[in-house]
Image (cartoon, rainbow, N blue to C red; front, side):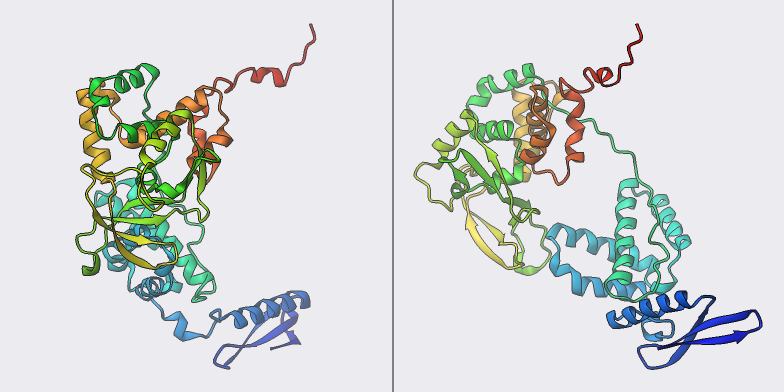
Length: 391
């Protein structure tokens, strides 16, 4: 690469002569030498990093279908199982059939808009369409930033349509809690300890199902939440008939949840005469089931253990028990509703949003802010911050 001074009809220009990855020369001119020097510097860096240059025709011919294949091969090993399932569906059923033959470097905003409108007219919800388009934008950024297939991503700033989220949620007031937990059918229920645990810790049903005796620290009065019991959804014959997997949490280090007296009594009773690897909450009548165990390093083994069927527990058992205990049908909750109930009463009793965010394991305090309006101090005395008194 070199910079030379040239005299043209419009005056003096500075010419940068370049070579692509195959050694073929091409050039570009600038009105100032400093512009030419900066461009040369950037192009040298691009070439070192493997970026496509203006005459690299091989990379310029890659299609969206090629991009999907490349992403599947290189990036899927880094993803969680649920993400793999969703992304595979997006690519195979939507992106490749409609955009697969378009060259990656030729994708324009008009193509994405047309694709987005097609999905909406096909009857998909706005949220589903938003997820598909957002994933496609991720693919294009991957082509530009990681694979270096294109110099410029023409749709980088595309804004996918999205529905305004309703921040409202259902939770039980004190009288609802008392009616449910004082009812005889609750006290005679096999899962009563699990219901109380969910209400007193705010843990997710999958986190509770994955809890093992070794995660309970009675000395420090806390519980380690680092695993989750998730629906398996494996399509391969290798795991055919296995419905659940035990996975590491998204946060590699997990989190700790303190025990109040109720939780401590429950766990003391359940952890007696069990080994450290045994699950705390088990299914009735304590039968074993096969689950896929993942330790977070993409290694998988099948283990046999007694775990709750978290899907059936949330959608069926809890629902039927609410009917028997006389809960108003309009106030019926899923198991996740007990998490909302814990969080709501935590805030209403004066707990801070920051501490609650840590307890619930939220990735951002913005998620926890849906409970802000329940705080007794929320917007209280805000007028006192500015008070110009001329009386």
